[in-house]
Image (cartoon, rainbow, N blue to C red):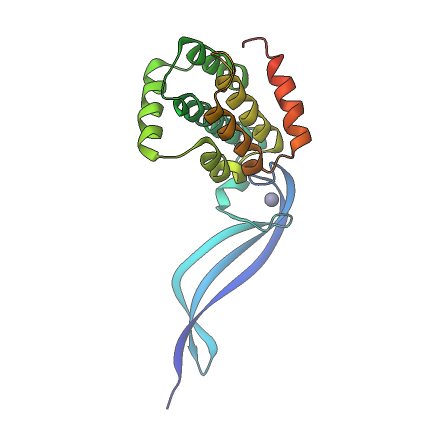
Length: 209
Ligand SMILES: [Zn+2]
């Protein structure tokens, strides 16, 4: 009996330096090719057509598409930064929606902090779209934050807390429901209590509030 099978092998170890989208910094990498082979008696003999190329960061071990090697660091960083600002915005919107009333003060501070972090103006259409999507999602600020946390730098997680606090406190003292919700956020983002207090103090000094 001839034993025939297939196996996937990871080959090649071209090395270099790149801007890692997960570490958000310059790192060394290995470029690999995964290729399927037909095996005879467990020995890979015939390469099959399908190959998958990827780049692995030596620090975080995450795989990326090879195109990350061709883009300049500042281009990758500005893409990631824009995505992070959208995440912060969505947590602010979820916080705004938590008390079921959208006040003018909440709307104003939300736009002000978004402008502060992103350098962009939030349009009415964009806000309306996000409100509809997030209302339908059933997510809370902490649940959303926990999902997005992996894509954020430490500072971007902190901006999420500051943004949520600014919106929650925009129309006077926090309600119990808002306070409960707000206290879940730092835990979801891996921020300890001391740092949380410092961030609240920082939020209270935000000029656009
Ligand atoms: Zn990395």
